[in-house]
Image (tube, rainbow, N blue to C red; front, side, top):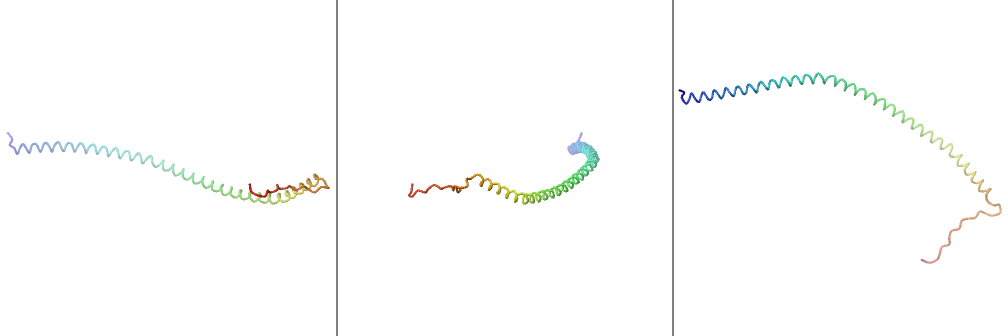
Length: 133
């Protein structure tokens, strides 16, 4: 038969054996998890490199398109300035003689439409009333 000390030692030994088995099981599962994680990271790294290359090419193409757009925008600004200058010149060239021709035709029309013996009638303003309303 076992004494009290031997029984206590046996219980502690069984407890430690169960604890070691439990810790071993946890460590095995942790090792499996680390292997799977390593595999996943490796696959992700293998797939990320081509994606980064494609993204770099796309950014380069976008930069080229922006450069082209910048050139076109500058050229359109020049065209706009040229159109503005042509408009200003045409306005000054055409408007002076056009106003003179319109004034001349208006004067000729007025001269031909009124009778020669009567002076032109001036519009009369209504007489102002004296006093308050």
